[in-house]
Length: 375
Image (cartoon, rainbow, N blue to C red; front, side, top):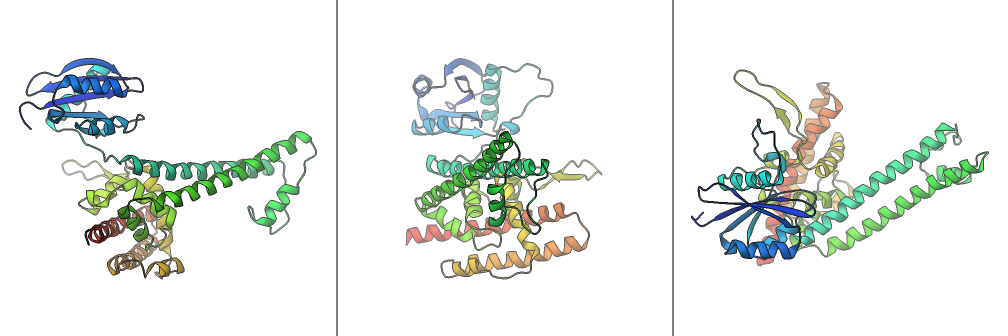
């Protein structure tokens, strides 16, 4: 960077932004606090001088990426950094917005900050929609638990052989009556809540289908290609594509594994070599769908009907990676199970290796989409 480069640290909150700047080898100085409003940010950039000489950073948080998008439009280079990876001194006992902004400015100048990948507004909108569907599924599960446990608490059981949540079971629930009106009102409310969540999920899934049709070609190519893998259907493929972003930003598969948080933690020093549980420091949404998909590899490799329907539209390279994934992961699952490893560890190990095949397919699909766009 040139001598005139100014490194700006921002401690961003819902209503305020504490700003600090450092130039060259000078000491970081505070510029005070401004309102967290677009016009205030625009005035600040104007006072700081040429936007091309500014290097701004702030921590990722609940305020999202609105500030990043605004600064980028103003011609300012901005980095959103991971809060957990900001260096800090163990002896520090005073924390203020001013000190945090100055620390960010100094660390940005020295290159000690780790930036996170920032999606564009369209990508963020699709990711929000997918996460809303995930939240709806969790709410549906809670609603079902309330209903089933309410019936259990009063000893209400259907006829022998009637499985829960089947059509026959629902017919029994809707026709069941308690002795007291208050109980029946409670039962009706729980039943209506489950129905409401089902309708909510169906509405969100329909919206996801429409949004995917309007998605960029490279994202649609990745979503289609990932479905060649066993255990990765449409919703899972969309979740992976939206949470990862672009696969080519990772140079190696191990980097994506670290991003998911399903790599072992380690604390080794000298002659001591100690590894522990998985870090869980990555993307929890992505980690959840990977673990769900990993369960499918306990079965012997085969091509199901869904995968057969995709063979005509996918490249041979993608199909070859997907088949090698089935062979490799099933063999891995079988070996670990025969060693009497706990089921949770087996699935976690399979999910970690599945990430490598997902990365390979994602990179291949993005390259194919780029070549098609140039042709």
